[in-house]
Each structure stands twice: as C-alpha cells, then as structure tokens.
Amino acid sequence: MKFRNRISSHIYAPKVFSQCIQFNYINRGLETYPCVFNGEDEIVDFKPEYLSKSISNVPLAIGKWVVPKQYTYTVRNCYVANHTIYDPANPDLLYPEILPEISVNWRKLGGQFNFKSRFLLKLKRKNVESIDEAVILSNSWWTTFYHGVVDSFLKIYDFRHYWTDFSKLKIIVFGKPNSFQLQYMDLLGLNPENILYLDNNTRLRVGRLHLSSSRRNRYAISPDSIKRFSENLYKSIKQSRGTPKRILISRANSTTRRLENENELFINLLKPRGFKLIQLEDLRVQDQISLFQGAEIVIGLHGSGFTNLIFSKETLLIELLPFDSWIHTHFLGICASCTFKYYGILCTKSLETDEDFNLVAPLDEVETVLNNSSIY
Image (cartoon, rainbow, N blue to C red; front, side, top):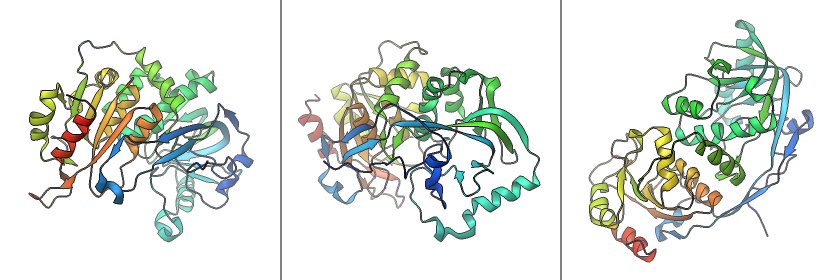
C-alpha cells in the first residue's frame, strides 16, 4: 500500500512553526540537534462521500496521508528576529517562518528572499535583548483563523506535555495579536506576563529555544492532537444549550468569496429542513466552539470558519467550493482527521459581476445531495 507524502525523519526536519524552507544543508536538522520523538505516525484517509463531477479539474488530495510522529528539540544560544531563527553554531542552517501552504523554487526568487544576509545585517545594526528560555507560538500566517488554530494553538498542549516547566517559559509571538488570538490565549490559560510580542525592530538572543514539529502534513492534521486540544478546551468553556444542529455558515459580510444565491439556497432548500443561518463573525470564539460542538450538519462556502470542525463530535460537512482556487482540501483534511463525512460541491462564477469572489451554488446539485443523504 502506498501512502502519499510519507515523511522520512532524515529528510524533513526540522519543521519550525508549520513548514520549513529547505535552504542549503537544512536537511541536516535532525543530525545537528538531538531530537526527542513522541508517539507514532498517524494515517489519515482522505475519502469524501461525494464530489461534484466537474471537480475533476480541481486539485484535491485524495488518498492516505501520514502525519509523522511528533518530535521536539532545542536550539541553544540562537537569535530570533523577523520571523527567523539563526543559530551561530550551525551557520548553514537558517529557519525562516514562511507561508506554510506553498512550495516555491526559492533560487528563482533571488535577493528578494535572501533571508540570511538580510537577517545577519540587521543583527549587526540593532541592539539585541537576551532571555534564558522560550518557545515560539506564532507562524507567518497565524493572523488567519485556520493557521492560527491549526499551526499555532494546536501545539500548546504538546508544549505543556513535553516541557513540564512550560508555565515558566517565555512565549514568543511575532506582531500584535488580533481579537480571536487574544480570545484563544485566554481560553488556553496562557499567562500574559510570559508572552513576548516582537515587532520588526526587536532582536532576541535565546539561551534555550524549544521547538516542536508541525502537527500536520499539508492538509492532514494529527487526530491525536485534535482530540487532545478539543477535549482540553471543552473544560474551559461553559456549554451553551439549544445550539442549532443544522447550520448554514454565511459569508454575506465577507470581502472575499461571497455566495450570490445564498438567500435562495437558505430560503428554498435549507430553512425548510431545519437549518439556521449563522454569521460566525458575530460570535465569540467560545460560542463558535459551542456551536460546532453540537452541530450535526454544516454547509457553507469555503472559509476559515470551518476550522471549528475540530471541536465537533460527529458532523457532516457540505462544502461549497470556489471554482478556480487551489484551497480545496483544508476542510476535507479536517473531516478526514476527525472521520467526519465530507461532501464537496463546486460552485460557478457569477454571471452578474466580473469579480471572481462572487460565486453561485448549484441548487439542483445541493438538493440532490441533501435528499440522497436523507437530510429532510
């Protein structure tokens, strides 16, 4: 049996934050630092219940994926600045914090992305502060909901599990956190006095910087990490009563990707079946968690709010997919990691506007999926 993206420990390391650029000799990471491996590899099977016939031209990661067992290691006497880690003892290794979803031929980008020389030059020009011991929480896309939750906050309980003195460690965060990040920090019980917010002008020298590998392989997320994260957060939240079991996630107020016929979809097909229309931006993080914890059927246009599915218990997702985008496998991945049923329906471009983010859901196909799934 062949698994996609099997990650061998000797070639994919170290993974800092979410993914790691492979600069010269970056693959020496596991040989350079003593690593502690934890748990076992996890297999996630991407097996949707239904996909639109027209979706064949859209890239979807179907099949079995492996999430490698987690590992941790420590870099000593290193420098941290501008989303980058530099270890003077191993100058050929540089760990930039990058866009985690994109594979790029970095040689073709030239000096624009010459992180190493730029970083070292700034180190020489700026004053450097020193701290003894720390972990890094943020990643380069952590201001977006999906990456903030999956690539950053999901690792908090790993940190707490593998470093027993985690409560005493400094937590490095790049930039000023937004509203949902602050809410998560509060729910996770992070001590505000331990959090260091770094701007672009701050340089840190860290005596011991503890790093943890990513808990996902592309779209496949560690089922164990999801379970540990969701079960622990449930304890911090007062559960709401009477949350709807069937929900349509609205993007009517979004500046990107809107469903032009959302009202028709809701009034004609979903409301008679007991669905409620929800705008997640109106809810606090803990209310979103409670909503998804009780949801049995979720439908909506692709958007980061579906990240909340990690808190669901047994849910069916009907995702309305953009017609020409590469971002089609994130929530199939969550459903696969949680063994939820997934239905993917491809939308078409609106004929009423030239803007690509206005989409039209195929109502006949949605109705067929609902009926075939006995959703009445």
